[in-house]
Length: 347
Ligand code: A2P
Image (cartoon, rainbow, N blue to C red; front, side, top):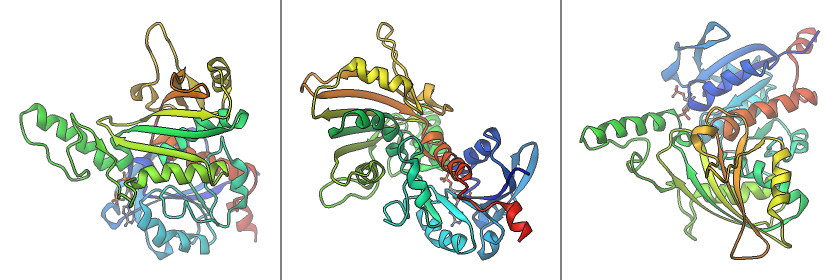
């Protein structure tokens, strides 16, 4: 009998949670049972899954008693509160928040880059930050062939990274501005419609925000290179969904554009998008709803002989969050690293 697994989604009503629901269905994850968890605010709401309406429950101490796999996307403090309990109840947790990412005991996994790390889990696997995932998928295949010496990134991050409420805020702000009204700000500190601002996560004493340091530290952990030279500037832009990134790579030796194209054309999780005659390259509207990271505009850096420039767009909610988590779950199933419901029933 094929194995099936009892899955719970914590944060099921959120932007990533609803995408997780769709992906479990479309990718035919072997579900034995599916539990939808959120805050008390959402208790009793229903979400559609495979043609039926499933009730959302408020998360409690009893929520994890019969769960094999927890997919969590409800923010760092919620993860810190509930994941240890879920793990002690016997579940494996894949956490989308930053709560456990830099914990040396917790693998940080991008299946196209370091799938082997998943096997080392002790109950928790962390899903990296969205901008980090998109960059890692595009850069790793080049780095594997010829190590990079330095990476400089600038991001153009959509509202979706701040959740469903933030996406709604951009729409209401846009309507307000078009009607000549003053836009209200709640999810973001400043108006995002018709504007952009440096990422508003807390700044460290060197002036880097948390989002930028996530790109630095998480990429180092995923690539297994604690000294890799990386610097990033993260910017929020008035795009609803899908992030874009400009990436400058410096190698030890020249890396030809044609070689980079050849590698990225076949790289897992990447779609090469370049039409130089039409000046057509990756855009968030084309990346939205897609699984692959769109990569293009690959150029020789004219300021140095060993440099390449790349441009990418990737769906932040999908590959940047929910899809990566489901791919990790699939990896655990494939390697038999989850406890199946059927075998538990027999013990
Ligand atoms: P709720 O809808 O009940 O607030 P997003 O990232 O799109 O903002 O979604 C966040 C998700 O995390 C939502 O499903 C939200 O549930 C959930 N969430 C937020 N805070 C908590 C909490 N304290 N306990 C459980 N779920 C939470």
